[in-house]
Amino acid sequence: MIEDTETIDEFLARHSADVEEAVRAAARAEILPRFRRLAAHEVDQKNGPHDLVTDADRKAELYLTEALCALLPGSVVVGEEAVHANPATYEAIRGDAPVWIVDPVDGTRQFVRGEDGFCTLVALARHGVVLASWTYAPVRGQLATAVRGRGAFLDGERLYAGPPTPGRDLAVATSHPDYTTEEQKRALLGLRTEGVAPRACGSAGLEYLAVARGQLDAVAFSWEAAWDHAAGLLLVEESGGAHLTLTGEPFRVTGGNSLPFTAARDAATARRVLRLLSGAA
Image 1 (cartoon, rainbow, N blue to C red):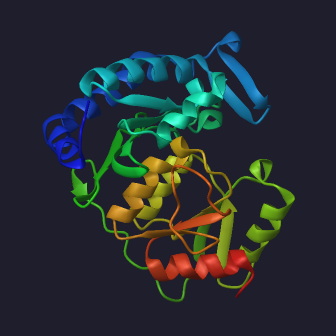
Image 2 (cartoon, rainbow, N blue to C red):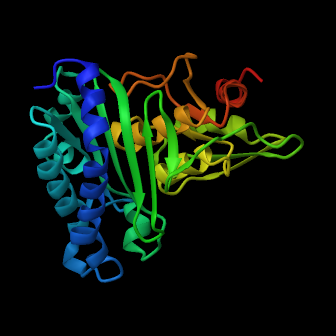
């Protein structure tokens, strides 16, 4: 069992490359062989027609669960598909053990449609603090990584989000309307104003990567499932960005956040989006 953050730091120094290889191997073994080859019986609905799961999701999560727990004895996995099967497993994210937060296929709808806009998300957290993350878009051949306090990287190149370009509309990816309550829809309507160009998001993980790269100014999301956000939020933080919930506090992967929330290229942009979401602007 890992006893303190320092030993987790040592683990990351020794085994980050092994985690990266586990993520790549899961994609090679379970995701890419099914890309554009899914049979009808390999696709199911979870909570409705917009919430899909495939054999690639299930099998890649099982692969990662075995591989990651073997790399870090005493750790546990909170994965999207395991939590769907047994919601009580989500409680591990609030426990004492190091936890791997896993979304095997983020952007399942894109994956099912045969589009390349999906990724595998893995984050390592303890006591609610995300310590490291891996965002892998296998068809695009992109791997983004971040370690708390050590920066964010895409394929080995340091990421700096930087401030938005002055004079241009603020580009913001928002929750898809299918996943918002009426109250959240009203909050998101605050972004439909002069100087802001909102659009529905695709894969959350890839939207966060776009913010970290300075290709997207901000996101505004209305749900808090940790597997969708943990990896990307650390990427944004380590590239110089910021994230805020409606109460003005940073997003917590352990839950209980005031929604919607935003993550942006810099703190000033995060505050601007937050004011629009709260109706204060």
